[in-house]
Length: 276
Image 1 (cartoon, rainbow, N blue to C red):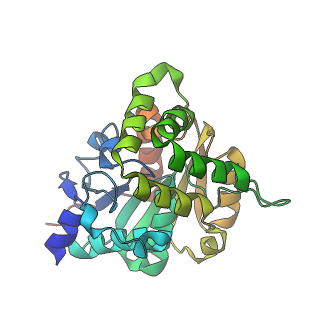
Image 2 (image 1 turned 90 degrees about the vertical axis):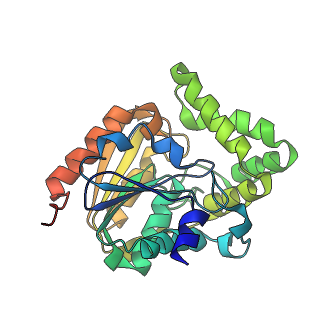
Image 3 (image 1 turned 45 degrees about the vertical axis):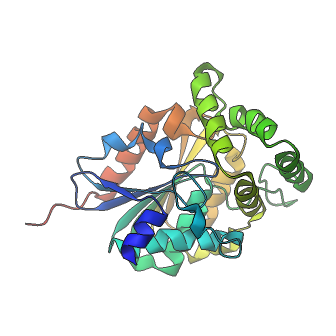
């Protein structure tokens, strides 16, 4: 059963350290997107990389529409992997929607995790006037979903540069476009709907773990107001606004991403020493 899960989610375990550090990719991506960051942590941590069912090189036969109709289904992927590898004291590093997925997993099984590192997180992408700015009106998201159905390739070519927001690094936007296009369009649309219409604001007070919120200075998907909201409503959280622009700083600005994560972990006393 454990081996089935490791194959299902295309799990890779690398690194020479003892404490687990799990890297969870965002919508339309896969574990390969972490390649600029993970080498900096291999010496001190045991790194766990994986693909959500429906993404990357996961086993598409395991995709279940009902299970993945909410973020809790993806959180179960995370918990299944933790169980299969018998992981404890996990430092969970989640990008974009994976931030909320990791948050949900930590609420369900807090004993599995030590802390959360949230890159470009958003508990709600839709604006909720007058008190919450998420960045999008419902009509904006419905328009994107409609474009996905009518012209998936066109949607990918339009959205990837907006998300990356680093025109000088065009190869990264192209890579993101290719990643979008390699995903089954039906699965991608359902994941997009779950991502952009989810509302995890009421889950925030239930989080018992310390967390780092990493907010980019210009991000089309998660504006600065979102980072501020999270800091105010997520217990025991720290907010760092990066100089990086775009929604994927682990790809476009890996040096700053690594530095901020290491500074945070150093202050908090990680990694755990190796046992004799």
